[in-house]
Image (cartoon, rainbow, N blue to C red; front, side, top):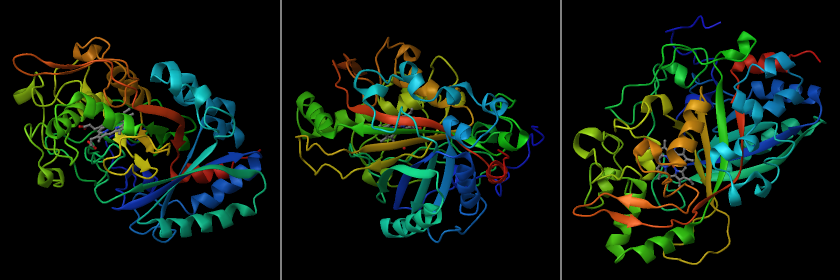
Length: 443
Ligand code: HEM
């Protein structure tokens, strides 16, 4: 095992969903499948293995749509993966997300007992993700997929979530999302921040050297431990009306409202970073992939007069800021997509419609990447010297938020709970050779 130290990523064995940039705009769908019979689950994997496209492919196997497949720990059990192999996966993955609720801050309204079924219950076995340039092309691919599994007794799609991304990837609070991503050595994807050296491939894909000069622990046998990645799915409901009301109530006027919105996020809604445009929005900057992420914090904004250290983006990636810990070990590849219709512009009352973010993380280290950021940086402020101040956008609410300012800081108290977890699960995206191996498992 681990014979690929320093070797190029094996793009023809890695699922395209791990590395491939999505089309823009795009539609996405997440389907959860329950496996009631091991042989049926393996037959499904056999069929999916010919549909899932490798990262090296320039064309998809299913027209203009791209599919990826991931299994949960319960899913591996359901297809009959031996116990020794199950026990070799990352511990958090074996536990499942509901069991990690305390560590992840999924308490109160976000607690697993309030999650949308089937999350936190039985049957979350296999997660299929489909991505296409628009909803029609996606639906055509889904229809073909449905036909392909209709004759397999013992596997049942039990949940589906439609998602969409506009060309500017606006998320429900109204900010441009999908801007900042770490570059990965050997992936071919361009860096979003030219000042950040690419991460070692082993931060994203199992079986390669990582930032610590070693290898992430890998599941056995070897075929499972190479070219696969962990995936974290979370359905995050966003209280858009409450967010707008809060900004309105705490700002002195429309301009201040936008400034406050930017201070909370670390970016203006256009995507322009406070780091490069601290006084006013700059939509041209926000739309420019070459400039909008080209910054660090330490040299010209150590205190956070431009970008507050407690803002969502700066917490989630402090870059070169002086914080407890080493940010490069906690970088995240995000694949989130908005769901639900936007709340119409200017509306301050809740319309009762479910909207939010289907958050997805892909990486080799679910604990030191996703769980660390979620629990230490989003769920608290110790690392910043801010006590237990939580993330003002994504945190559990109730805390304070401080905007460094001269002569005295601006302080917001008792932040509401704007983002509620509706469910989620840890999964594993096997390589293409592992998919075929799993499909051929003996009972
Ligand atoms: C509904 C919930 C969330 C919303 C609305 C949201 C929104 C945003 C927005 C607008 C940005 C700036 C655009 C960009 O850099 O791509 C951003 C950045 C980011 N978010 Fe979130 N986010 C949410 C949840 C999360 C969670 C749960 C995590 C981690 C566990 C996270 C981690 C990050 C990271 C790592 C960045 C990039 C920061 C940087 O490199 O500058 N986000 N988010």
